[in-house]
Image 1 (cartoon, one colour):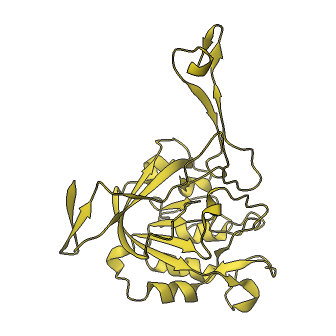
Image 2 (image 1 turned 120 degrees about the vertical axis):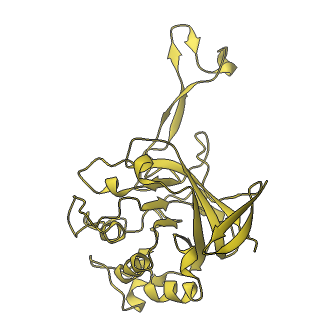
Image 3 (image 1 turned 30 degrees about the horizontal axis):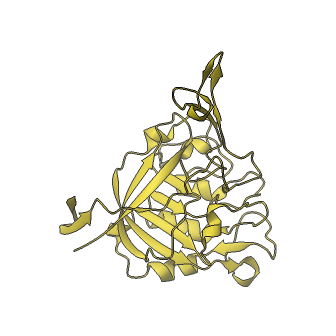
Length: 271
């Protein structure tokens, strides 16, 4: 199916039959990505008396109890309710269906080799996604394509689909980089690590607060808070998907929660 979309008076063609899936499938019986050392996600056949939810064990159909933590067990999309006392749900926050997006590949810098900062003391193992690198990679990208920003970190390999991040600490955004993202008006940020903040940051989640326009240390939204912005973490963008402009369809489970498993789909743009 061919779909035509008009963005800033320019018409583009989209092939809806060939989406590029940048989510990580959650394999309940195999290797999984894991953040913060959380329990692995599980799927267990339900049982009630003689009723067994597994056809391999004689059940009439398969039905399972799923146990997982969206923030830790795979690709997920979160909303401002992640850091506020107000129980705002991601299904309420996400209003956009087809979103102009820019994909960029970034080589994180050693924290001691850049002048950019972060609110907690950094060490030699920390790697930062910097404003300098983001600005260089986004040079020439029109604002029409920055409703969503997709960041692929380098080096890039499919071990990200099963990585234990307690053993391999991921990079994160510098404060200057996150302010730059906010200044660019990005509404939906997608990254291939478990958090845009340092894994252990004394609970500040400062980058999340910058992105949603929440005051430092605050757990309350205000009139200027960006409650319809979303952050999607733990994606995987294969090398064959080139940097550039795409149309993003951000699919989420309709959970009344601050985060939900998600499936971001990218569609190539043809003028």
